[in-house]
Image (cartoon, rainbow, N blue to C red; front, side, top):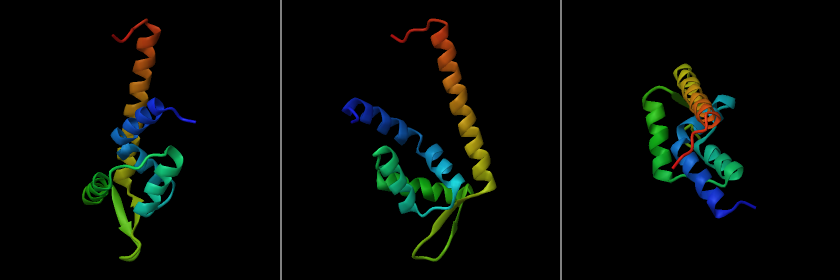
Length: 112
């Protein structure tokens, strides 16, 4: 069972990294919006704000990171080449952040 503290931390992390998580899901296969939301809920017990999620999807499509396919009833989102490059950059940034954090811990850095 997850404590409320763990839930809050995980929810805040997912909220702040929704772009990274959504692109990673789309790297595996094309998905409908509801499938992404379903995956977030079942994997992490996380339900992002619907308005913010729809705005994220609109942004990804308008900036060319994601393409829409399918019919009007069931649009599927598919990551583009630009989206894969963006995902790679985000993953590198995340790994660099964790590496930096680990290095600071090894040097005895203590947060105050």
